[in-house]
Image 1 (cartoon, one colour):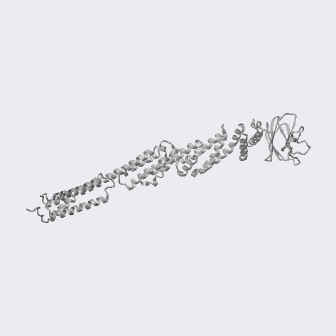
Image 2 (tube, one colour):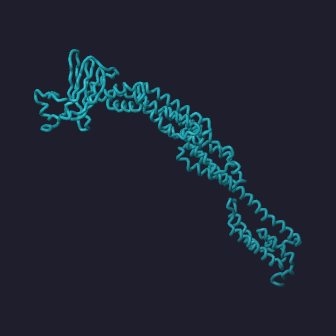
Image 3 (cartoon, helix red, strand yellow):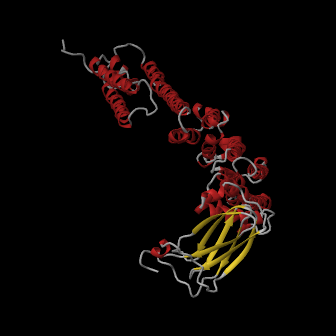
Length: 500
């Protein structure tokens, strides 16, 4: 008896059947020839591929591994065909049936590829949905933060929405982006919904930049969604600041007029500004006229800084009116300062008023108040009463200048006024020791002193002699004038001990 059965005669159809059966990846060709070890190798190779490939993920299987597995299947098919050429099949089925079975089993790897691609596509869809969910959560979480802190995260979420819409336009995640963008807009502009208009301005300005990231076609009506809301926020924030006398209202109104010049909100700017000027002008006659004057000055400057567009003429008129009211209101401010004893400020204010309002009905009294304020700087008692425009009297007072300097004589009391006297050309300053001697009498040498005679009513009049020399100190005198007397005032200058 031979030790092994003789090889079968060559059979090409059987060879094809074994090769085709091995292409299934299950080594069935080897199984029909009872080559169990080789069949096990096929199973191990297929198992390794399945372990690596499953569960399916968007990245799929490494191309190198797939190539190696395909090469292995081809090798198993070729090797099986070569062995099956002279090896009888263990399963006594007709060879054509084995070929048919092999062809049918080819559907296993082919179907596996189809199913794997489907699973991979589903994994990709889930990955994109996960990205969408994370972006949504990023928007929701940062909606509770300040806009400055949240803005970088908003940009990050917006980038995800844009990528889903463009790079993955057919995905389920991309189909949901339009609804997410609506949520994005309402979340970013959350301050507007809460009527926190000043906080809403940077949020809405940012939303107007979104079309630079996501196309207007994708955004649809959202592309213009922030416009009216931003116009409203600029107006409301500016109007509130104007009413509260805050300094930043021109910024908001200026942005509104420049960005939305045709809007209904822009049309409300000039009436609000006009009303603010009127309100400040009324304050001039109130308890704090100086504050009202400063507000009017500020309004005039601020209104002039607006980019006014169609309202240019009206706003220019408002600025001019505010400036004019401020100039005119300086009188009431100066009176208030004088009554409060702030004679330095009253003098400055009244002098400015006189210079800027040459035809004002209060011009004459303003000049008197300025004189009285200057006298009160040296003699505070002179400022107890607000001077009137009264003039003249029954008592004669002559003022002589016994000094080499030109002087201005200011006086206030029942009447207020001032005049100047030229310096005495032949006069010199007296030494301080001379003025302390008994019997010292200036204006008594018989010289032709520069002089002026005025008439004043009875009562106390306060005099100040102010030398025009900036280095000299004013002198003062308080005269209690009575009827039946003729009074003389003498102005002279003194130097230090031992000097003239």
